[in-house]
Amino acid sequence: MFWVYILQNPTGRFYIGHTNNLGNRVASHNRTDKIRNKFTRKNGPWNLVWSEEHPDRSSAMRREREIKNWKSARLIRECLLKVKT
Image 1 (cartoon, rainbow, N blue to C red):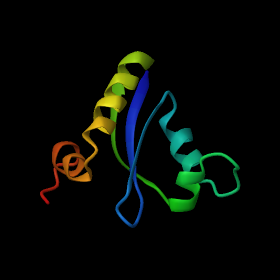
Image 2: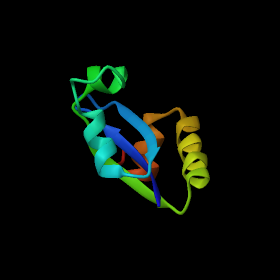
Image 3: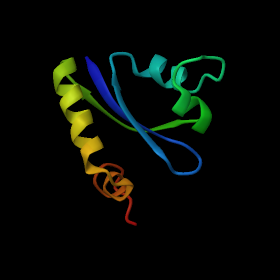
């Protein structure tokens, strides 16, 4: 199984991604000792605020692209997190 997920930091910024191991991936984003993941390392800590399960990587990648193409934090809050802005 694969997951599409959204992380949010204390300033309200979002990070959208996909993975086959959600727990490890969230922990990886919150590590500060890694060279990779500069955006998440510099802008964390991150909390998992939404996730969606998919049967395969291709459907997870399609859904990730769909959410990223919204280009609006307002749409993420209203459509996925069910928060009125």
